[in-house]
Image 1 (tube, rainbow, N blue to C red):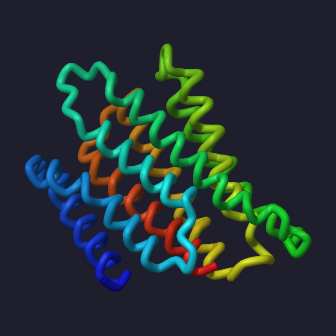
Image 2 (image 1 turned 90 degrees about the vertical axis):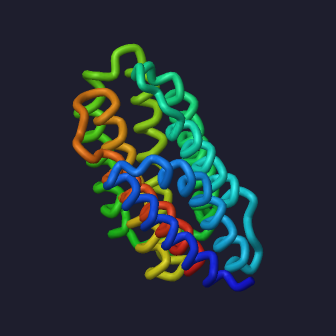
Length: 219
């Protein structure tokens, strides 16, 4: 099978999932969500000349986080949110490993590109300021998660000068959108419920995951 088939499948599943969330069609949500990251993983696996275990692990932990966060929690105990948070945290760590592998090639890194780190740092600080005061006992965990996702965003800048600029910018956009998704989700959990939050969280999350993978493939 060609990678294009799995890319089309991922996009179709993503659209079906977001529409299901918008209409609160739970059967659609529970059927489609577990299929999203496997479709993206297959697209990456078939597209890459030498598929990397760390990239597959990053996508895989995203899948695990998806599973935890789709488990119903009508009492709002957040007991599934915690392992989901850990899964996404590990996914970010593996993305950091993937993009940090370009550090040895940074002799060609443009000095002005350091400015590209600013949006990630500013977004992380803004997100923590919004969520931290409401996180209670999980405040330290949210701070640690914020640091990790800021680092994840920042390392996507490192290949600038040693990889395709279009690929680097695509991966950077993916990391940024992924951060926005995390902030929306955490704000909804800890600060204030957002109407149709899952639509915003999942659309940005899925776009972020796809752009990270696509950017890396363009290197």
